[in-house]
Image 1 (cartoon, rainbow, N blue to C red):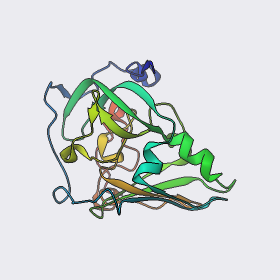
Image 2 (cartoon, rainbow, N blue to C red):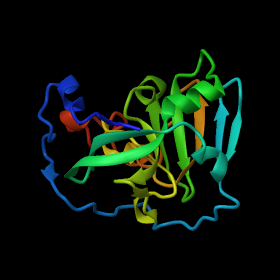
Image 3 (cartoon, rainbow, N blue to C red):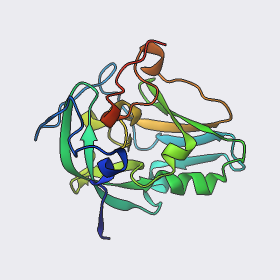
Length: 200
C-alpha cells in the first residue's frame, strides 16, 4: 500500500503550508476534553446511524477488516501548533458513507466519541480526500492518548474537528453543533482563515 501525500492541501486556500498564527513542532502534544477513556476490544462497537439507507454496526475486527489507506498529512491544533508529515493509516470516511448508502437529504455529519465528545462537519467536507478514521500513526497502532483505538483526522480543518476515540457517526438532514462548537469555537475551523473562535 503506497503513501498518498496530502500535505499540499494549503494550496487550495491560497496560504502557506504553516497556517497563520501557528508554530511548527516535532512533538505531538496531548489535549483532550476529560482524559483518556478506557475501552475493551471485545465490547467496542462503531455505529453509523441517521439519514442512511443502511445503519451499520462494526466490531473492532470488522472495522479493521475494512479497506484502508495511508496518507502523509499535516496536523493543525487550534491552540497554535502544527505537526508536519504525520503518516496516518485508516479507513477513508468515503468508504463508510458508501457502505451506509447515505440518503439524498443528508447534509451534515456528527461524530461522537467514547468520552462523550462530539464534533460536526458538513457532509461534503467529510467526503474529500484526507478525512480518515485513523488506526495507525507512523506505522504503529494509534496511541490511546492521541485518540486510539480510532480517531478522525481532518487536515483541512483545525484538529478539534477530528474526534478522538470516535465510535459513532450520525448523518444529519440539518446541522447540529458539537461539544466545542457549542462553547464558542468556530463551526468552520479553517486554519488558513484563522477561524478559531465564533461567538455568534
